[in-house]
Length: 542
Image (cartoon, rainbow, N blue to C red; front, top):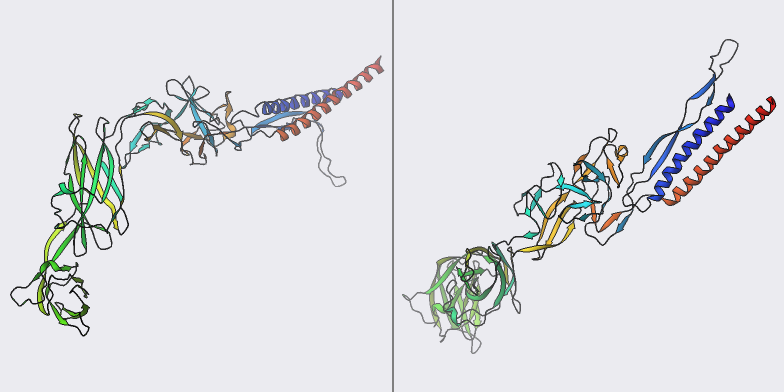
């Protein structure tokens, strides 16, 4: 009976709208659930009852369409809105929001992997990183790069992450001491400082009388047991030869023997450090007449000068009280200047010659020979062996890098030192980077990674099956998961101190709820109308 069809059709409409309301109610109930994804219901009609089939046209009549009456509605699907929810700030460093399509991987009590967008992570009493009691998974197996930093094996299988200890790093709550192996000095020394009287490029003389160092800084040296000793590094401008100026360095520390404990570095005329220099000597030729009064100590030569014989001629100047000083270089070129006391500087084509005023200046000539002297080498990266005289530990070898120092004409020196060693420390706090790497900050100031959180991505994330506790399971529709590093494969990066909010739009849900309500009322009206029609039919029979 057709009236009965109307009743069953209306019933299907009531059931469908009830399902729609159930989904809307669940969305609204989870409006504050971290990482929740809203769902929507799609409908489709049921099979239709064919009253008469369609007929084709003939020579005298047209075609006739089929006559069909629908038999109701059904729920075709419930789809999930996978758009990323808004981000809310948090006070916890282990709260993490995702910006892309990735899912956190957690391990259940049965050992199975499930997936969630809820990034509210905590640490249990054993050090497991958990979400709602489920252990977060990632990578803890690693190798070390050239700088000693951990590089996690992200191609390997994921494992439960424990930030306190694991099979690869052992105890991660305590960071063992690391002996100092390198020390670096950087900054400037004052090129205007006074050289030491009587010193040569690599012989400063008696250092015990030095009370005023030109530059000083300290570094902390740690031995294998974590004992820290302050080491003082002093520098003193030593001597200048031509365009090369040497500086003497000395290291010392209480209860330490250091070998070597001193050495020399050198700078060129522009203040840049050099590793070698060949000194030139200017020797007065005593085999010829020397009537000007100049001696070897009055002659200063720059590097690069042409070797050979040079002549200085002193003659009375037309200006009273002055002299004309003429230099003839090894190539026969002459240079003349006027001086009252014999001091003069000549810039030749190959370098500079500076004459200091002699004790007694006279007119006449002097001949001197420029020749190569000793070649000096300077070590800007000495290897120091430091041994404690009280701690009873092994000696520490420290590569001291002085190459970061430059000489400038400043009023004072400014040096700083840095070392790579540290004493033992305990974990104080944790943080998570955008790629999921977990870092522990220790009481000694060191920051070391202790694991890396993995993300899962799916070919069809809409095919995931909800499993409660904000968890999803993979299904044949979603396909198997692929593990990726956050920020790759469309997974999105991680934002620490933040949580992803539900993406439920309340205004949209209320609108959908009113539509479902009206549809439900309309279907119920159909049922009451059909009931009235049946009642009328029964009354006719009566």
